[in-house]
Length: 202
View 1 (cartoon, rainbow, N blue to C red):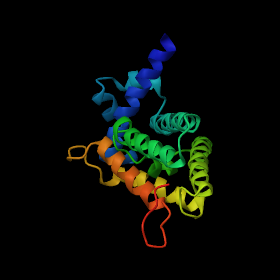
View 2: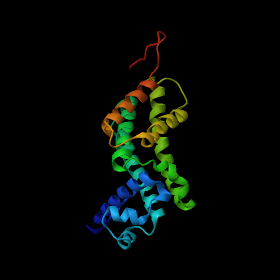
View 3: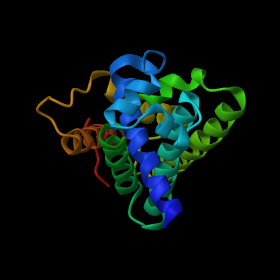
View 4: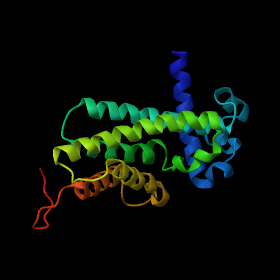
């Protein structure tokens, strides 16, 4: 199927670009460097993307589509709010470290032109609202301690989005281990605390 083959090739280019953005930053990475990593000519690269900004936009757009699909699956799959949050955190960590090669794409928003930026922000806000709904569900059910779900969403997503700033793919911890650890810490940090100072597990 030509369209599916084209999309797969665009995702391959995305991953090469993400690696280059990680090493050199968006402004420091060139389309030539991205093309050489894939053993392509710049002309071939421009068959799939007209310029570097379009690659960056596709990185954001593709990533957010993956996260929104994940959010829909988690919400449809049932389970407690803690289970839902755990699944979201683990999958989010896997996505940014493995699929996007540890690139903190959220730090490059300003490089997009206003029309593309608005499209990315709209999808990002949909994901943020979905996470917020999971947290509010947990607060309402008493699974999480009372709090401002919007601020808690910023804390959770901020913690995960910061991982690429320190993550070393040559280090001893895999993305799965990091995802589990962050899910453990974040979910435990949201649990209510009893009068005796013990974290509850209901």
